Amino acid sequence: MPVVSVTPAAAELIRSLRGRHGPLMFHQSGGCCDGSAPMCFPAGEFRTGSSDVLLASLAVDGVTEPVEFWMSKSQWELWKHTTLTVDVVPGRGSGFSLEAPEGVRFLIRSHLAP
Image (tube, rainbow, N blue to C red; front, side):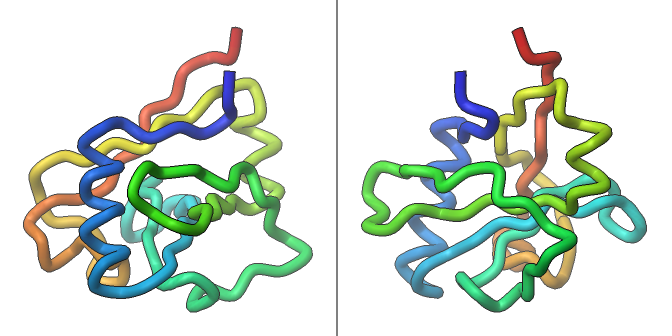
């Protein structure tokens, strides 16, 4: 089972955002303003470094390139026993994440890994 997957609704939104913004990436927010929201950015816009870990290069139907999913190492230490699913729900998320103007927000659903 993959560490990170996407729901059909999230895949649809990713395709739409990709069409408008080009290649995409996610970085899992560690809290603060947006709780634990997966934040979507144009690929490379969020600077990752040695304190981050690449959890997945997501293959999304209709998107040419993989969509990288990053998380801070310290947060992954707490979440490493889970599998993550990127979903989308109605509501306003972060003003920094690309889906914010759409009236929906990405949401992470976590489950204990088998």
